[in-house]
Image (cartoon, rainbow, N blue to C red; front, side, top):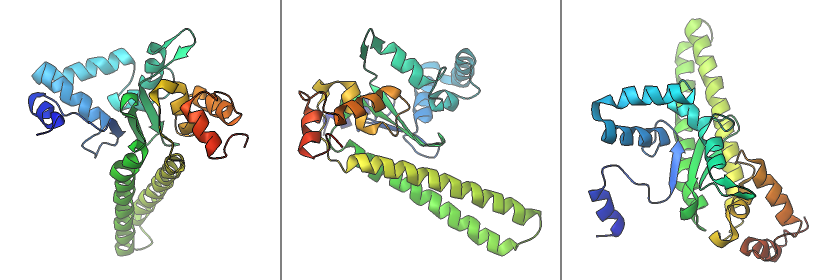
Length: 238
Protein backbone atom coordinates (compact mmCIF):
# COMPACT_ATOMS: atom_id res chain seq x y z
CA UNK A 1 0.00 0.00 0.00
CA UNK A 2 1.42 3.40 -1.00
CA UNK A 3 1.99 6.26 1.45
CA UNK A 4 -0.70 8.23 -0.37
CA UNK A 5 -3.22 5.39 0.06
CA UNK A 6 -2.41 5.11 3.77
CA UNK A 7 -2.75 8.87 4.21
CA UNK A 8 -6.07 8.90 2.34
CA UNK A 9 -7.40 6.19 4.64
CA UNK A 10 -6.36 8.10 7.75
CA UNK A 11 -7.24 11.64 6.69
CA UNK A 12 -10.85 12.86 6.98
CA UNK A 13 -10.91 14.69 3.62
CA UNK A 14 -9.71 13.79 0.13
CA UNK A 15 -6.20 14.79 -0.89
CA UNK A 16 -5.27 15.63 -4.48
CA UNK A 17 -1.78 14.21 -4.64
CA UNK A 18 -1.24 15.54 -8.16
CA UNK A 19 -1.36 19.09 -6.78
CA UNK A 20 -4.23 20.14 -9.05
CA UNK A 21 -7.70 21.42 -8.23
CA UNK A 22 -10.18 22.73 -10.76
CA UNK A 23 -12.85 25.41 -10.89
CA UNK A 24 -15.57 23.17 -12.26
CA UNK A 25 -18.73 22.44 -10.21
CA UNK A 26 -19.22 19.08 -11.95
CA UNK A 27 -15.73 17.74 -11.18
CA UNK A 28 -14.94 15.77 -8.00
CA UNK A 29 -11.74 17.83 -7.63
CA UNK A 30 -13.62 21.12 -7.76
CA UNK A 31 -11.97 23.63 -5.41
CA UNK A 32 -15.24 24.80 -3.85
CA UNK A 33 -16.32 21.19 -3.26
CA UNK A 34 -13.02 20.55 -1.48
CA UNK A 35 -13.47 23.60 0.75
CA UNK A 36 -16.99 22.47 1.64
CA UNK A 37 -15.69 19.02 2.55
CA UNK A 38 -13.35 20.66 5.06
CA UNK A 39 -16.15 22.80 6.47
CA UNK A 40 -18.31 19.70 6.90
CA UNK A 41 -15.55 17.90 8.80
CA UNK A 42 -14.87 20.85 11.09
CA UNK A 43 -18.33 22.33 11.62
CA UNK A 44 -20.64 19.36 10.91
CA UNK A 45 -24.23 20.61 10.66
CA UNK A 46 -23.17 24.26 10.80
CA UNK A 47 -21.10 24.09 7.61
CA UNK A 48 -23.63 25.95 5.44
CA UNK A 49 -23.99 28.73 8.00
CA UNK A 50 -20.21 29.06 8.34
CA UNK A 51 -19.84 29.25 4.56
CA UNK A 52 -22.45 32.00 4.43
CA UNK A 53 -20.65 33.93 7.18
CA UNK A 54 -17.34 33.53 5.34
CA UNK A 55 -18.84 34.87 2.11
CA UNK A 56 -20.24 37.88 3.97
CA UNK A 57 -16.85 38.55 5.56
CA UNK A 58 -15.12 38.23 2.17
CA UNK A 59 -17.67 40.48 0.46
CA UNK A 60 -18.82 37.91 -2.10
CA UNK A 61 -22.21 36.36 -2.85
CA UNK A 62 -20.83 32.87 -3.38
CA UNK A 63 -17.64 31.09 -2.37
CA UNK A 64 -16.90 30.42 -6.04
CA UNK A 65 -16.87 34.16 -6.69
CA UNK A 66 -13.98 34.49 -4.24
CA UNK A 67 -11.90 31.94 -6.12
CA UNK A 68 -12.83 33.22 -9.58
CA UNK A 69 -12.09 36.88 -8.93
CA UNK A 70 -8.43 37.45 -9.85
CA UNK A 71 -8.21 41.05 -8.61
CA UNK A 72 -8.69 42.78 -5.28
CA UNK A 73 -11.02 40.87 -2.99
CA UNK A 74 -10.33 37.50 -4.61
CA UNK A 75 -8.32 34.56 -3.28
CA UNK A 76 -5.54 34.91 -5.84
CA UNK A 77 -4.85 38.54 -5.00
CA UNK A 78 -5.04 37.84 -1.26
CA UNK A 79 -2.69 34.88 -1.64
CA UNK A 80 -0.10 36.82 -3.67
CA UNK A 81 -0.05 39.58 -1.06
CA UNK A 82 0.37 37.11 1.79
CA UNK A 83 3.24 35.39 -0.01
CA UNK A 84 5.07 38.56 -0.98
CA UNK A 85 7.60 40.32 1.18
CA UNK A 86 9.84 43.18 0.10
CA UNK A 87 11.00 42.22 -3.43
CA UNK A 88 10.23 38.52 -2.98
CA UNK A 89 7.00 37.28 -4.58
CA UNK A 90 6.33 33.59 -4.16
CA UNK A 91 2.68 32.45 -4.32
CA UNK A 92 2.52 28.67 -3.98
CA UNK A 93 -1.02 28.25 -5.36
CA UNK A 94 -1.20 29.29 -9.00
CA UNK A 95 -4.38 30.36 -10.74
CA UNK A 96 -4.52 29.32 -14.42
CA UNK A 97 -7.72 30.88 -15.69
CA UNK A 98 -9.68 31.00 -18.95
CA UNK A 99 -10.35 34.33 -20.66
CA UNK A 100 -13.87 34.85 -19.24
CA UNK A 101 -13.15 33.15 -15.89
CA UNK A 102 -15.60 30.30 -16.44
CA UNK A 103 -12.90 27.69 -15.96
CA UNK A 104 -9.62 27.47 -14.10
CA UNK A 105 -7.01 25.18 -12.66
CA UNK A 106 -5.36 25.72 -9.30
CA UNK A 107 -1.82 24.32 -9.29
CA UNK A 108 0.26 23.68 -6.17
CA UNK A 109 3.80 24.93 -6.79
CA UNK A 110 5.57 22.31 -4.71
CA UNK A 111 4.01 19.55 -6.84
CA UNK A 112 4.99 21.27 -10.08
CA UNK A 113 7.04 18.96 -12.30
CA UNK A 114 7.63 18.24 -15.99
CA UNK A 115 4.44 16.18 -16.25
CA UNK A 116 1.95 18.41 -14.42
CA UNK A 117 0.77 20.43 -17.42
CA UNK A 118 0.20 17.28 -19.48
CA UNK A 119 -1.68 15.72 -16.55
CA UNK A 120 -3.79 18.88 -16.39
CA UNK A 121 -4.69 18.54 -20.05
CA UNK A 122 -5.33 14.80 -19.94
CA UNK A 123 -7.20 14.56 -16.65
CA UNK A 124 -9.02 17.88 -16.49
CA UNK A 125 -9.13 20.07 -19.59
CA UNK A 126 -9.70 17.49 -22.33
CA UNK A 127 -12.50 15.65 -20.44
CA UNK A 128 -14.14 19.00 -19.68
CA UNK A 129 -14.15 19.96 -23.36
CA UNK A 130 -15.55 16.56 -24.30
CA UNK A 131 -18.39 16.93 -21.81
CA UNK A 132 -19.26 20.38 -23.10
CA UNK A 133 -19.10 19.21 -26.72
CA UNK A 134 -21.55 16.43 -25.84
CA UNK A 135 -23.80 18.99 -24.21
CA UNK A 136 -23.70 21.14 -27.34
CA UNK A 137 -24.64 18.13 -29.47
CA UNK A 138 -27.61 17.48 -27.20
CA UNK A 139 -28.74 21.08 -27.51
CA UNK A 140 -28.49 20.96 -31.30
CA UNK A 141 -30.54 17.77 -31.34
CA UNK A 142 -33.08 19.44 -29.10
CA UNK A 143 -33.21 22.40 -31.51
CA UNK A 144 -33.99 20.06 -34.38
CA UNK A 145 -36.92 18.63 -32.45
CA UNK A 146 -38.48 21.97 -31.46
CA UNK A 147 -38.14 23.62 -34.88
CA UNK A 148 -37.16 27.18 -35.78
CA UNK A 149 -39.99 29.22 -34.28
CA UNK A 150 -41.63 29.68 -30.91
CA UNK A 151 -40.36 30.51 -27.43
CA UNK A 152 -38.81 27.07 -26.93
CA UNK A 153 -36.77 27.45 -30.13
CA UNK A 154 -35.53 30.90 -29.07
CA UNK A 155 -34.57 29.60 -25.64
CA UNK A 156 -32.65 26.72 -27.19
CA UNK A 157 -30.90 29.10 -29.60
CA UNK A 158 -29.69 31.16 -26.64
CA UNK A 159 -28.46 28.05 -24.86
CA UNK A 160 -26.62 26.90 -27.99
CA UNK A 161 -24.94 30.28 -28.38
CA UNK A 162 -23.89 30.28 -24.73
CA UNK A 163 -22.53 26.75 -25.05
CA UNK A 164 -20.59 27.63 -28.20
CA UNK A 165 -19.05 30.61 -26.41
CA UNK A 166 -18.03 28.40 -23.50
CA UNK A 167 -16.38 25.90 -25.84
CA UNK A 168 -14.48 28.68 -27.60
CA UNK A 169 -13.24 29.84 -24.19
CA UNK A 170 -12.23 26.33 -23.12
CA UNK A 171 -10.40 25.61 -26.38
CA UNK A 172 -8.52 28.88 -26.04
CA UNK A 173 -7.49 27.82 -22.55
CA UNK A 174 -6.42 24.41 -23.84
CA UNK A 175 -4.37 25.92 -26.67
CA UNK A 176 -2.45 28.23 -24.33
CA UNK A 177 -1.81 25.48 -21.80
CA UNK A 178 -0.69 23.02 -24.47
CA UNK A 179 1.67 25.59 -25.96
CA UNK A 180 3.52 25.76 -22.65
CA UNK A 181 3.39 21.99 -22.08
CA UNK A 182 4.89 21.39 -25.52
CA UNK A 183 7.97 23.38 -24.54
CA UNK A 184 8.85 20.37 -22.35
CA UNK A 185 10.50 22.55 -19.74
CA UNK A 186 11.74 20.78 -16.63
CA UNK A 187 10.91 22.92 -13.58
CA UNK A 188 13.59 23.60 -11.01
CA UNK A 189 12.07 24.93 -7.79
CA UNK A 190 15.44 26.48 -6.95
CA UNK A 191 14.82 28.97 -9.77
CA UNK A 192 12.03 30.48 -7.70
CA UNK A 193 8.32 31.02 -8.27
CA UNK A 194 8.49 33.99 -10.65
CA UNK A 195 10.71 32.19 -13.16
CA UNK A 196 8.77 28.92 -13.04
CA UNK A 197 5.41 30.61 -13.46
CA UNK A 198 6.63 32.91 -16.26
CA UNK A 199 5.92 30.53 -19.20
CA UNK A 200 2.27 30.41 -18.08
CA UNK A 201 1.86 34.18 -18.26
CA UNK A 202 -0.99 33.97 -20.80
CA UNK A 203 -3.11 32.07 -18.26
CA UNK A 204 -2.00 33.63 -14.98
CA UNK A 205 -3.69 36.95 -14.04
CA UNK A 206 -0.44 38.35 -12.69
CA UNK A 207 1.67 40.95 -14.48
CA UNK A 208 4.84 39.61 -12.82
CA UNK A 209 4.60 36.44 -14.90
CA UNK A 210 4.59 38.38 -18.18
CA UNK A 211 7.40 40.63 -16.96
CA UNK A 212 9.71 37.76 -16.09
CA UNK A 213 8.86 35.85 -19.29
CA UNK A 214 9.94 38.86 -21.35
CA UNK A 215 13.14 39.12 -19.34
CA UNK A 216 13.87 35.41 -19.76
CA UNK A 217 13.48 35.67 -23.54
CA UNK A 218 15.74 38.72 -23.50
CA UNK A 219 18.51 36.59 -21.99
CA UNK A 220 18.34 37.56 -18.34
CA UNK A 221 18.71 34.98 -15.58
CA UNK A 222 21.27 32.95 -17.52
CA UNK A 223 22.17 31.23 -14.26
CA UNK A 224 18.71 29.67 -13.95
CA UNK A 225 17.73 26.20 -15.10
CA UNK A 226 14.83 27.58 -17.12
CA UNK A 227 17.05 30.24 -18.68
CA UNK A 228 19.48 27.57 -19.84
CA UNK A 229 16.66 25.43 -21.26
CA UNK A 230 15.18 28.36 -23.20
CA UNK A 231 18.61 29.14 -24.66
CA UNK A 232 19.09 25.50 -25.68
CA UNK A 233 15.71 25.59 -27.43
CA UNK A 234 16.70 28.70 -29.34
CA UNK A 235 14.01 30.85 -27.72
CA UNK A 236 16.25 33.47 -26.16
CA UNK A 237 16.37 36.62 -28.22
CA UNK A 238 13.11 35.88 -30.04
